[in-house]
Length: 338
Ligand SMILES: CCCC(=O)SCCNC(=O)CCNC(=O)[C@H](O)C(C)(C)COP(=O)(O)OP(=O)(O)OC[C@H]1O[C@@H](n2cnc3c(N)ncnc32)[C@H](O)[C@@H]1OP(=O)(O)O
Ligand SMILES: Nc1ncnc2c1ncn2[C@@H]1O[C@H](COP(=O)(O)OP(=O)(O)OP(=O)(O)O)[C@@H](O)[C@H]1O
Ligand SMILES: O=C(O)CCC(=O)C(=O)O
Ligand SMILES: [Fe+2]
Ligand SMILES: [Mg+2]
Image (cartoon, rainbow, N blue to C red; front, side, top):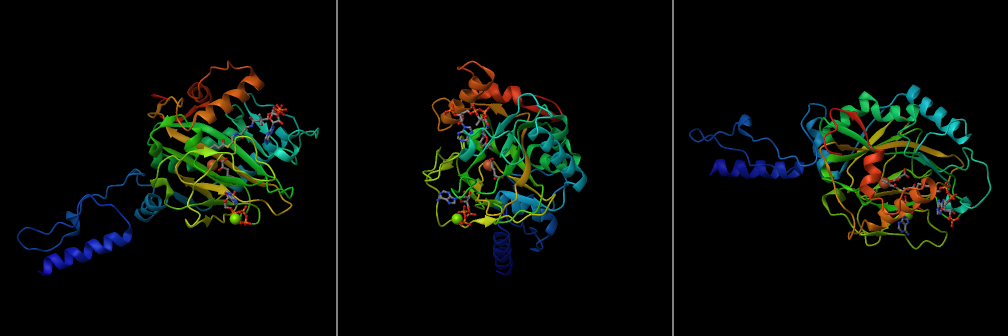
């Protein structure tokens, strides 16, 4: 009687921790006492046990699909990324394979590239200075908790969200990053996103819908925004308007790790500053590529290959997986599959 009541209470407590357990507490067969040692290991689905994350951190990621680590990247490293970004904007270096994006409101203007006209650089894997970000041991230490030991850097960006022109084109609509990726399984992919300065709702910090990583990949398309939308900024059409949103206020060097199914975006930048972040999507090298033809991701393949054809002359029948196979770089362990 007592025993089943205490088991029930324990289950309630565990339920409060929000954790899926393989089994409830096991009562000792003869004494009836509940020994803490007889708990089975919790069934974590989204994190791995490598003694880096505390139990609370693992539970937080499992439940919410993201985890912020304060003060992870040093000021000195961020200064180096900033300097290199400035050199790229001035045209002093032109890393191969990298694309430079301007806000849609000035996409067709004749402005010379400068820190004020570049809204994002993407695919900087051939830029030694920026790519250092993807090899920082303090970052990889956390990445490994999600990907395991064979780690590939698959997608890199430095985002310089400009002051909004008044048309709210600096917004990034709510989306799931998996929409852009032709590899699986999703639980072996993680994004590291590091604030290069203080970010909050005023300059368009990251906004997340906690727990949405437990859902599926949703269809994406261009939002119907009056002021225009940046190329490839696809959004989820049918997200739950009432789903709670969390705005991640972060300081320089703080890093958020998040799951590729987590619904997220960023609001418009109402300041006069250029909000800078650096990020990389990592995946386990043991992941496998998928063919996105006939899926909701076809639009990504069409646009990415279309741009690649226009800028680099890649064949029009190149697949999204070929693009990623070419872009991906091993940063730790062995390049097994990807
Ligand atoms: C987890 C992943 C999440 C994401 O990846 S989100 C989005 C990812 N993709 C991107 O950021 C795109 C990367 N950027 C690029 O590929 C290039 O910057 C881009 C957009 C092709 C521009 O390349 P450029 O070399 O500057 O070529 P271009 O000036 O001749 O422009 C080509 C055509 O694109 C247009 N364009 C450029 N920037 C744009 C913008 N922000 N929004 C809408 N359209 C834009 C531009 O007007 C031009 O159009 P047209 O061919 O003249 O009609
Ligand atoms: N009408 C909309 N349709 C789809 N996504 C939107 C819409 N408005 C905002 N978002 C997105 O929702 C997320 C949360 O944005 P947030 O509410 O912080 O900014 P905002 O709506 O741009 O500005 P505000 O602070 O005025 O609400 C961002 O990803 C933003 O791009
Ligand atoms: O930093 C931001 O604005 C978010 C960008 C983003 O989510 C993305 O490019 O996938
Ligand atoms: Fe994203
Ligand atoms: Mg809003």
